Length: 303
Image (cartoon, rainbow, N blue to C red; front, side, top):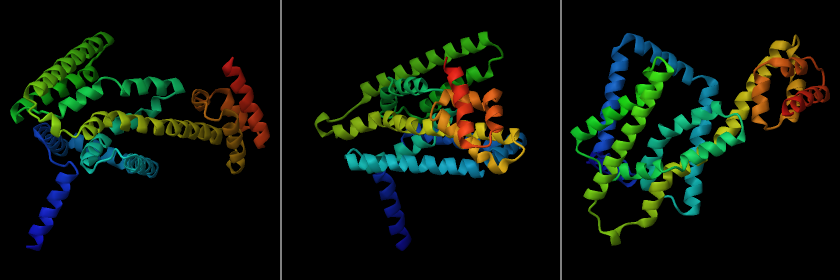
């Protein structure tokens, strides 16, 4: 009886927090399990997976995962204080966090300037958010979902298999048209099969669910900028250490660089490539001298 009661409570909690998979999500889980089984069965893939896991569990990456997790938890707390959070969004937030969120987090290495953030923000708030909302309303039967998702996976992976720019361009067009057609089919299916009593709809929750990917995307985008700065400075500091014979006083040169460059991400990335700035700053012996050298190079690059 105790086990039955515990199981009932767990199931009730999962349902209350949105963990009630529909056909689309069941098919996604089936494909994920099939992919995992293939990875484990194939010796070469299994070796690559173990290597990736070892890399992902390194000290610095573990710190990154912890920061990322705490950032999403902070989002939930802020949303709750604002009054737009509902426990039923837990599953959507979790799924987004381990899929789209991680992809967006990884993009911080592509950031070079604030304009990148503006462009990425525009992409995040695009119409795909609305399509994603509709795609989770009315799934097809499991066989149709299986076909659709396999087609989508193949279309998405096509550009990666291109051997030249012409093939890549063709593959990208095929992917775009495939995504457009599938999205249109799903939206039309949703609108045709929707059977709801509009008066009983929780419009606030519906709107929040629709814009949740956008809100989470913008929230993670805020995090990518300081991460980009940190990663770029790590490379600058490494080059300073390489250029110096005495690393015990390298902190002076590093502080000087930080004071001179601040959060100018483009300039920090230029310094990280090597060149004259890292070398000249590395051969200074005071914070002031390092600052002046870094400032001189900064002004030259800004011309």
